[in-house]
Image (cartoon, rainbow, N blue to C red; front, side, top):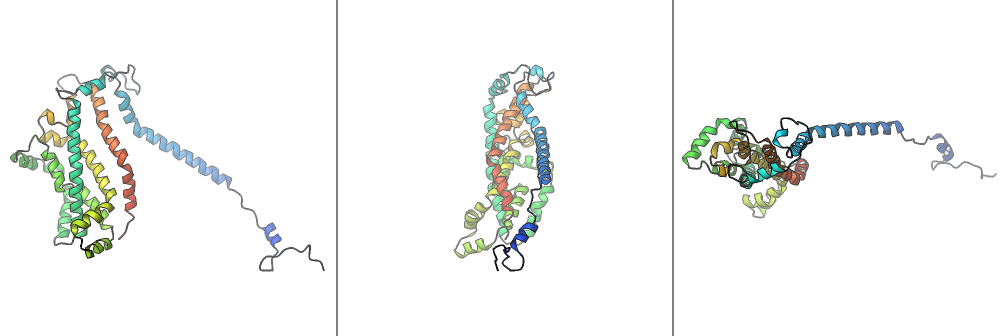
Length: 312
């Protein structure tokens, strides 16, 4: 009996393979689903693009307004200037009240740099004490530190001013810099505490077995692991110090010590004609360091989100 025309069977020997091939339908590409996802992607892209335009429009308007003469600020509220000019940049470079703009920039840079250094170091040390060291009264002190977040800044203005005035520090940078080195920013301390508490304590115990103390553990183990959080604190400390207006307004009286926020106020005087072109230009120039600082360190903010996944 010939078996040449017999249908091949499956490995089990019961069902022919050809029958399986004929009865099993071939998978087809869901074209409607692909088209639907494509349209959803396009719609989301258009919506996000519109939101981006709305958010960035004030910055773009500020940039183009730096090329407007003073006469156009009351007549041309649009984006493109009718008669572009670079005179605003020349006046800003010359400064105001006999002080060059470079001096105001330097004052702001010194205050911001010292604020970043003091805030990061003092907050990291305080956070390490709260997160990794066991001592009596830990809970009470931590609760008191968190409670300072509810205390408005305006409540302590007068006591602080009287204290710094008695110490002879008014009209200097000390009242604006010294508190940064004393861990007075409870927000940054709390942020670092949360990061440090998520780290496993096995590394600390292993380091102590090898003879390392708290300083060595803090410097060699904890700080490298909380680097994203430290960069986040540095970014916010820089922005807050660079934009601070009330503190320098209270403690600084000499124009030579004014930072940029106080210098911008000098361009607009209620008793005389305001130089809107120079004001807008100086505002844009003062905004550039913040944008550059944020763009350079923004990747550390993303790494900070990844660090949240580290569990002890």
